[in-house]
Image: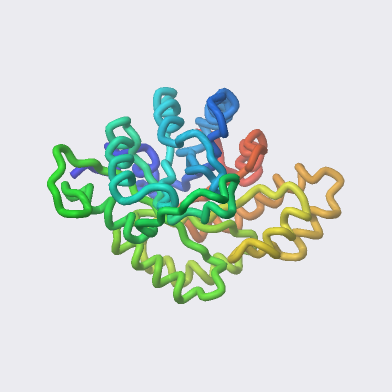
Length: 298
């Protein structure tokens, strides 16, 4: 079996217990990839790997697999997000084998959002598999056979991720699902956005027993209204009122946003193996966030 170092730099860094930084990029609706490629090139020395979303929030976009290959050609590592929304088990397995053949070594398995939430609400959802059964299917491929037990001619080897929600209302059930995902093959986790270190600490008191790397996500806040929207509409995400007030009172929201994100990284760092930054168009602020958090380049 391949070692983590042969699989990719992200896996090697996590195995070496290096504090890693991942960031999210949304492939565009269209073929103009220059802005995305420029962002990745700007951050390649600060970020271990970039998540490439799979038609994020059910809004149709160019295939993340194509983008992942183009970034690989620029020596930039990616985490290919794979959702169950649009493809059945045949197509999912086919795409995973194709990803491996193209040099992709990190995948993140997700159920995906309902198409009704996106820009093609009339689209028929598939959901042949869920996140856990997708993980089991991926484990089967890495064992040398497909989900139905038929042998492969050549076996892929991925570093496999899944997602967790530390702020879930029913935390015991969330932890049970996390355990199921690990048993199904998950090797690392990225979480729903965290803004209150106390919430993450409560989660980690139980989740640390699983002995897998956990990377809390931070969505870079752009306004107090954005923070309040998370509280009102995004399950499991809680932005403390003092953070909302700080954003509302800031004469320069961008400066406050950078300070809040850096402060969160400092608070979360002792509890986890890395951080996942979601900047949503503010990728140029990521270097300052990392600098202020005390995370050096390289």
